[in-house]
Image (cartoon, rainbow, N blue to C red; front, side):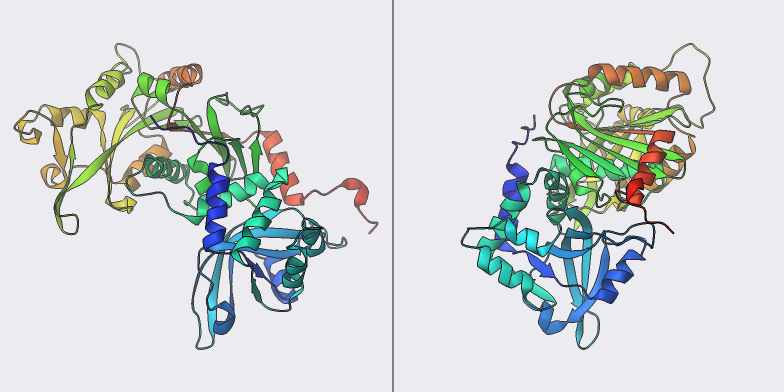
Length: 461
């Protein structure tokens, strides 16, 4: 069982990172600031050029701070000042003289001005040095390791900064190839693909349980859409309970995707899976169990990638078979009413396109085929043995998105009720719910785009 993350784990990781790769302060020109307001992604992600000498010696990825203005929807108002933290992801030669700087995952932080930032250090030994660096007239200003750690500590003391900084921390590194976190992130990205979004699509909102580890922090989010809660209860959302570690919502047209990372023990006992995708629009459900493919031969030049039976398989299969509909009329058209799938992932390689899926029925056929058995009688499945008879993720996602695979409507509703009743335990499972967007959520999105617009501050036209 995975040990729950202590409250200070991610903050400790962030401090260690800025100690090794100190914070950089970016000075934007007026034309650049104005240009960012007019782009689709705004300050969340952008790129720009700086002279090679100005960017030389900065290790990436690192945290980058810059000061700008928060856009207002009406041109007759003054845009208020705002401070942003982002990931300085990479730099590369753009021209003979300039480097192209790539910045991602910009989030708004407090305080919003350089003078207020200096005020955080009032009376401390770094006050003068921080002021000097913030006032320095240079495109890129690097802080020292100790200054960077102290600045992060100051920013973390501002409660509203914790959620945004936590998502930045999640984007600074990638999960280890052999970790459970990698599989959780894979499941989250699969849910986004099934919803019709790219993996880097920003969440409209993200709610993170205080002190709990969740793969959601490795996803993108709108700059003002993330909150860390002391309590784990987020009112108004299905499945949120004291066992939910994080929740994010994504929008696409009139549809909403709610993604939850939840504790797993009871859910795995109930279903034997790692990902549950409920589509309330097409009223179908698909449940996915991840299995690892190991290289046969050397790691550098494997002759095949093979899954060898693990200790959990028999119990998982027994659990899945309990949910097969028997002796009743089907509710809703499906090409296949199979709800359970196995996704086979290469352990040492992150490339998702090389993975494949098998429906439970096909996997059961393999179980009864002697050529897929070892001398000891255990199941062994590899690319060569399947001879191309498997499903790639693209085909799986297309069928799921169209509502052509998965449980029928009645079974889906029963699964939905059961999931809500058994959320408890340890480790992480991903639950994704696709549904219509509620009117109050549309209003909330409008309010986010209005950027704290207040009616009583409107000036006469």
